[in-house]
Length: 288
Image 1 (cartoon, one colour):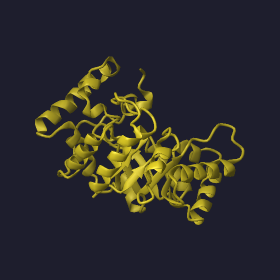
Image 2 (image 1 turned 90 degrees about the vertical axis):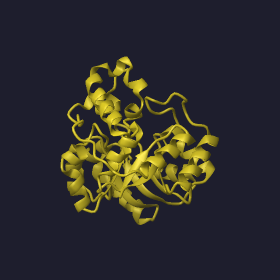
Image 3 (image 1 turned 90 degrees about the horizontal axis):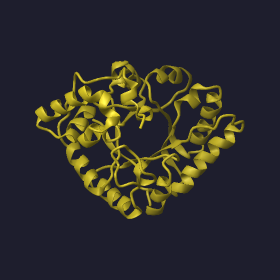
Image 4 (image 1 turned 120 degrees about the horizontal axis):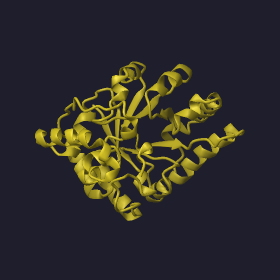
């Protein structure tokens, strides 16, 4: 059964289309971590790209957590790949105030697919050999990236979007194949940046083109007898091959609600997948 991991983008910058309160204060972060730990969550998912998130976590103290972080996308024209990767890892460890982390992910899969992918992965393997990280993985947006990366590199973790509208990681067959290769799969974007659990946001002009799709989701959720949040979680829990489910929160109340909902039975949501419409399922393509 999948385990919960706490996403930390909101700890370092105002993240998510449903975020109305902006970046979370350090005191609120500490309260969220306490509730999460008490609720059985032991993994934090963070990144250099999440603003001050890692520094906030480091100041609170996270050495007793399982830590997953990501190196940022490499700047075009970078020639010193070794220096770049090592500076990224050094910053992660310094900001988090730890000497090792469980997993490092390449945040931009195209960095591995590109011409300097071999150099990047080679440096990460050296860093693993030095016991600074335990596992090497990649964050993807499209399952089409997996075939190229897996044919070149023995990645141990793949992080991918998965939600009631986006089941590409499963429908493409890659979820089963990754599991067969003993690769951990971490699911993210299970609330689609909060869109799936905020009907107020769904009604804004930005999402007018997808009114019918979102209406079908709402009708399903209303008829289920569960909340939108519970249905989102139940859907992702139904995929046994998922190792971690990464959830972001805006408040201590919300993490408590998510922990409670995670205790409910798994239930697949069928008939709503719109994986072919990347303009909806990929938030980076939302035009505001």
